Picture 1: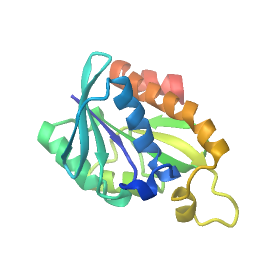
Picture 2: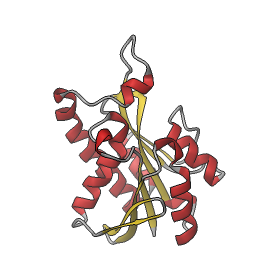
Picture 3: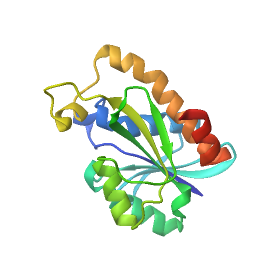
Length: 185
C-alpha cells in the first residue's frame, strides 16, 4: 500500500486558501478514484482507494498544518509503510505559481508541515510533491500570504495545476518517482 498525504488546515475557514493546496489535490484524487468512503482515523480523515491498480490510502491530516507529522506517523506505523511509499503533497511559496516539483528526499525548504513530518518520521527520505503558489508579494508576510485565499484569477489558474499535480501523484503510484519526476518537474 502507498500513502498519499495532502497537507492543509482543517475547517471551512481554511477552505480555498493557498496553504490547502495539498487537500485540494487529494480531493481530485478521491474523485477520480470514485469518491471512496472516508473514515476519521490517525488524527485525520482517510479514504482507501485504488489508483491505477495499486491500493493507496489518502490521508488529510486534521492536526493543523504544522503538526501533520503525528497523523502521518500513525498511518505509517499502522500499515507498516516504507518511507519511499509515502508521498506528501504540499504548497510551496518559494516556487512560482503553477510549478510542480517532485523529489524523493531533502529538506523541508521552509514548509512547516513537511518539516514536522520529516522530524516525526526521523528521515529526510520521504517523497514530496510541491505545488508552487509563489512568490510572496512584496510587503506581505509569508504566513499571511499562505493563509490567504486565491483571487478569482488565481483560482481559475489553479484548477489545471491541481489536476496536473493529481496526474503526477498518480504517475508516482503507477510508475515510480523517477518517471514522475522526469515528466512533471
